[in-house]
Structure formats: C-alpha cells, structure tokens
Image (cartoon, rainbow, N blue to C red; front, side, top):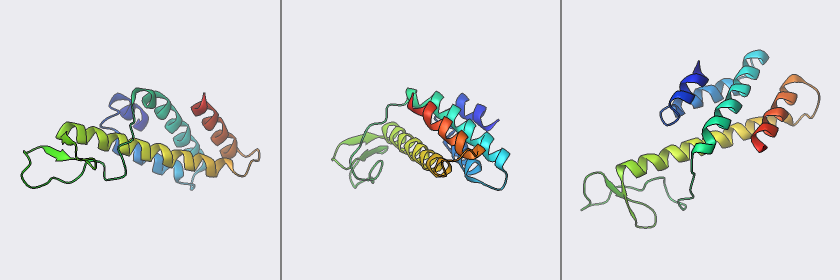
Length: 132
C-alpha cells in the first residue's frame, strides 16, 4: 500500500518513501524487510527516470530569504533569485536523492556478506536491477 501511494504521487510521497525505507532497514522480521527492500526497488525504478536531479552548489537547498526581497522569492547560494515553486522542487529533488543514497547504502550492507542468504541475494538482485 505504501508503494502504491508513493507511485500515485511521487512528489508528495517522499515522507511515505522514508517510512518504507525505515521498514527496509528494520531487521526484526526478515520477511517484512525483504518485502520493503523489494518495494523500494520498484518505487525507485519507477520514479527516478522522471526526475531531473541537478547539482545546485554547496549551500542549502534554497537559501535564506534576505531583507528587501519580494514575498515568495529567495536567493540561492549563487545569488540567483528563486521562486517558492523552484525552491520546493529543489527540496524535493534533494530529499529524493538522499532517500536513494540511503537505499543504496542499505543494499550495500545487506549484500556485503556475499553469501547465499536470502537478504544478501535480494540486495544483489535489487542492485543489479537499478544498474540496468
């Protein structure tokens, strides 16, 4: 259900994606973890191709509003004015990228034993699917 909700609204489902990742990291139930890991792979395979993630420099994702600026306009780290919509898009892109990095680190941890255990095999399969 979480995966379906995320896929229906990728821009608004980033909080649900973080919840799904938390389930994938939870090792209390191997079966639940496996389902969450596989669900994350499906979600990322579906939504990542539609996102154009750009590098925005080394500051915060939108900058702070400065004195004398119009309402809804901020200045980024390069001094470029950004509308509220652009800042929100950049924050979403940054959140998605952070979630994807978190997922890749999880897959790496699960695949590290390099044995034939179900978590290791599943993590390896997911990594391979993300590469293709």
